[in-house]
Length: 273
Image 1 (tube, rainbow, N blue to C red):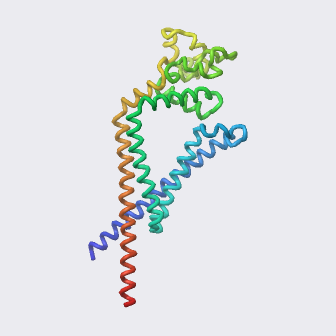
Image 2: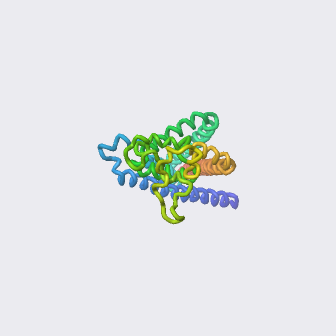
Image 3: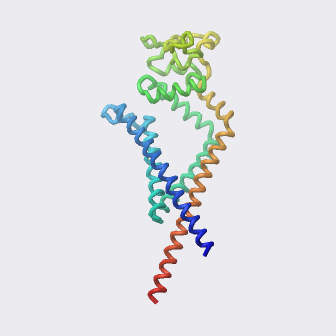
């Protein structure tokens, strides 16, 4: 009897651990979903003239991620609280698929590094083309260039793809690069100088290196990944471990529910006899 009570306590603990952890991630998913929808609505991405570009809007990633996360975790949350095997089976099956997908993605990423670099190059060049027109893409591009101290995809001359920074453009930005490419974008150390990259594409590399970062961001990303391989691997293993533990808890809870159903049926049958 003492063992049975101990086992019941453990099962109860696992049940509420699964419930509260999924509740937390459900709320997180809803916040991410709301952030994505707010971004799309704020930029009027649903307007008829912009609806064709919504598939490339970075806010759509937040919407999809938030929707998947909140829906998945809500099924686990309700399934654990109500001891609903159907919802728990959906939850565990989805988590299992996600675990398999992550392992497969890691293998593919390692095996096809060249192709992935090509996709990243295309994506960054596309973001550079829309740099002035999409605030989200502009923010992401600026953060990458500042964080990695780089300019463009392969080098600073890649900014030629942007209609405002193209050397044939009539404006003041012609043949320039964004201020986030500058080695020292602060004038006198305090004031942000948005014109520090003007005319940089006309300079040779020797002259330009004192004004802007010459290296592209793809090379910067590769170096960053090489320098943080251990950290990336550790985070990946921890995340994978958490999902596997979640699968174990869910399976244990479902087994306990089935056991209780069988036990209850046996007791009722005995009483009827």
